Structure formats: structure tokens, C-alpha cells
Image 1 (cartoon, rainbow, N blue to C red):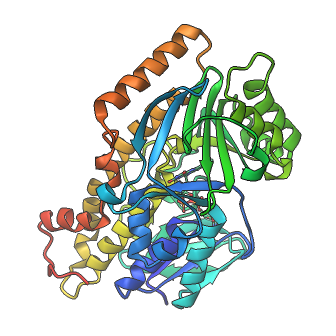
Image 2: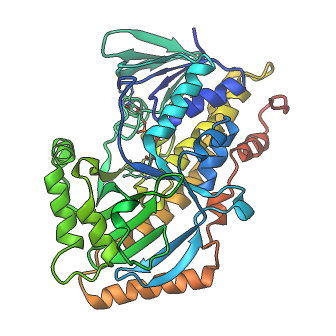
Image 3: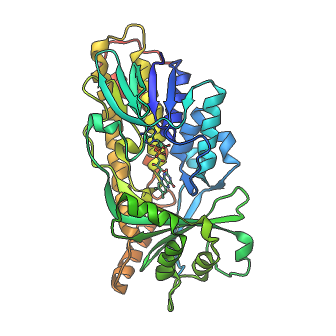
Length: 428
Ligand SMILES: Cc1cc2nc3c(=O)[nH]c(=O)nc-3n(C[C@H](O)[C@H](O)[C@H](O)COP(=O)(O)OP(=O)(O)OC[C@H]3O[C@@H](n4cnc5c(N)ncnc54)[C@H](O)[C@@H]3O)c2cc1C
């Protein structure tokens, strides 16, 4: 029997398994999708996410498969630079930021898991947590199999089944959605855009981020954020297959007659190979007071615990931090003189460590999301630009983001030490 059963093989699940392995704790991952499932789209990994990837030996592998950058320019909707801030920095944080295909990261994690001998079972749908006692928890799968382990960890994303055991709730739509695609730089050769890339443009009809996504910068990805009514799960799934509707949503906001968006935005929308278009509605999980069950044998991490919209570029980073800090925490519970009755207290120490940080990141994400919304009146748009210009000017090149990007998962050890739990204090 493995010590930890992990539901979900996205980002948080494999990172947890690899981090546990470092502490000599065995685990197995159960993933509903098939081994060769791919989801398009890119992701920006901030320094705090890359620090975790480094801790499991994967940073060197992925850094040469994506676009490394430090400065991100914020511009008005017509391309005028309002300011810049360090989205990553070798000097400040030891890591630049990395814009990379989501599938490359997933594949690197999958291969590493396989290489170190952690079992990962595909096409295994967890339907529920059956229950827990003082020593273990049990989950059930759609094929009827039941698996018991010391701990069950739900890393099963925003529509988590494991979460229902701890805090039954449904994700809430934020009113925003993203449309993403990429275009080969050779298609844009003749565009005299004058923009410093990567750039985030804040205009009257939404926001438009332009970010190279390949190591050589020759693939230019974009990410448009627009307001939409909720369509429900089926409606969103339908939109994902309707590339013409996605192209029309872009055209209505970015390439209409009289549009003042820079030529680069128009060119990207018009030259997009339609099959590269992907859509993503932004949902969030209502606030949870606890991420663990009463007996602390069932735990949720990542999007299943606190999915936050991508407007702060921190969702995956939070999932990775959760995984790494939880591994330190569970390692504590296996110390020879750890007394089982203190397990809920131990998990509480982990939650107390994570909660304030997550609140701060959610707050940052919400403020960013508000800036990405449309400004129907030109005065509103002018005010938005002024707020951005002033904020960037006042906060200097780091944009006041050191608290976010400097974080180290190891800090959780200090919080656990402060609880006074009777245990040895040496860590592997
Ligand atoms: C459009 C968009 C852009 C984003 N951009 C960024 C960004 O730039 N930077 C950033 O840091 N974050 C970004 N994020 C957020 C980031 O993608 C998520 O926060 C991250 O994927 C969460 O990782 P996770 O492992 O918790 O969940 P997921 O990656 O969703 O993984 C969950 C896994 O669980 C599996 N699963 C689900 N249900 C079951 C079940 N019942 N049984 C078994 N397996 C199951 C799923 O198939 C999946 O593989 C973005 C999100 C969106 C929507």
C-alpha cells in the first residue's frame, strides 16, 4: 500500500508526488485523462513557480523550451507604454519568468514521475472519497475500485470530487474569459509595431497580452481577456470547439472598424491559424476555511482548493507551492516520534502558513482582473491608464511584487516549528 494517494495528474499532483519522494514517502497518482491527452495554450511560470520546479530537478529541463524574459511592459490600448515591471529577474529572484506551452510542462512532469518509479494510472476517474478514520482514507473510482492510503490528496482541479468531502461547493464564474492562440513571427515581419514585448495592453474593450512563447521568440502567443456572460459547462465546451465564434469574439473587440488597438493586435487576430484558438472561462472556488478533513487524512491542493482566475499569472504557482509545502508537512507526520493525535494540528499549521499568502495573491489577482475589464467611457479608460502609470512609477522596477516572487516553500518548516508540536526538528 502506498502512503499517499494523489487524485489528479495536472501540475500539483506530480509535483507533490516528486516532492514526497524526496522525503522518502511513497505515492501513486490517479488521472482521469488518457496518457496522450494534450491541452493547447501557454502558461507563464513566475519565479516562485520556477523555484519549486527547480526543487524537483526540472527547471533546467524546461527553461530551454520556453521564452525567458524579465520585463513586462504595460501599455495603453493604443500601444503607448505606461510603465514596465519585473515579472521575473535573475538579480532579484534568481529566476526570469518563463512563458511556455502547458503541454511541455505536463510532459516533463509526467516523464520525471515515470523515471523515478512513481505509479501514475490514467483513465481513472475518482468519483468520491468514501471516508476516513484515524489512520487512513479511502477513495472510489468510476470502475468500482477502492483504494486506501495514509492520506488522500485531491489535486483534481477546479471541479474537484475530493473537495466535496471537505467542503461541498461549486466554482463561481468571474465574468471574464480568455481567448488564446499563437502566430509565427515570420507572419508579422512587416508590422511596424513599436511595442516592447512581452506586453500587456489595457484597452477600452478588454485587455490583450502579447508574449513570445518559444525559446527563440519566433512564436508569438497572445491572450485576450474579455467580459462574457456565463454559458455553463456545456456552453463553454461548445465554444471551445467553435473556432469561428472565438474568432468573431476577437474581431468584435480588437479589429472592428475604427479600432485604435495597435496594428500588431489586428495582425495577430487576423493571421491566427484558427485551429490554434483556445478559450478558457475564468472560474474561482469559493473561499474555504480549511483544506483538510476533520481527521486530516483528506487534503486538497491547487485549483481544487482555491482556483483563482489567471489574471495574476499565479494559479499554477500557487498549486506548485501548495504541493511543495504539503510535502514538508506530511514528512513531519512520518518522523519517528510524531504522535498521531497531533495530525490535525500539523495540517492546521500548514493551512495557517498558506492562507494569508493565498488571500494576498487572490487580492492581487482580483485587482489585475478589474484592470483587464473593458472601460465603456473614454474617461474611465483615461482613469485606468493614469492609475497604472502612477502605480508603476511609484512601485519601481519590481512593481512591489517581491513578496510574491521571493517566496520559498521551505518557509513552512518555520511555521510548523512554531506550533510547539512534539517532534524532532531535523528535516531531510
Ligand atoms: C486561461 C488560463 C491561463 C492561465 N495562465 C496561468 C499563468 O500564466 N500562470 C499561472 O501560474 N497559472 C495560470 N493559470 C492557472 C493554472 O493553469 C492552474 O492554476 C493550474 O493548472 C492548477 O494546477 P492543478 O494541478 O491544481 O489543476 P489542473 O492543472 O487543472 O490539474 C487537475 C488534474 O486533475 C485531473 N482530474 C480532474 N478530475 C479528476 C477525477 N475525478 N479523477 C482523476 N483525475 C481528475 C484533470 O484531468 C487534471 O489533469 C491559467 C489558467 C487559465 C484558465
